[in-house]
Length: 92
Image (cartoon, rainbow, N blue to C red; front, side, top):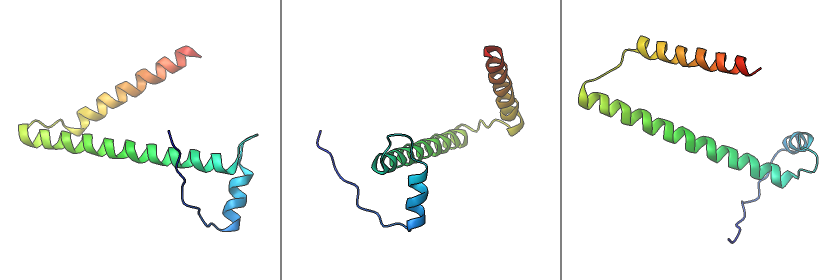
């Protein structure tokens, strides 16, 4: 696959220095920037998918008239969290 370039970016010298100060051993500024872009893209894609699922759920609830009360949702989430914590604690 052919590669493409990201437009060059002008930044404050302090930001460049800060970025260079956190580079891992053997890491280049270019690879750090690429990693940051990949992380940003993934985060935004995940957010969009989350919002899309939420809107679809809301539309389904409006269409069917079936809504789940917030306290029921919170109880289920708290139970899942407790189970995950217990599982994590059991591993250590």
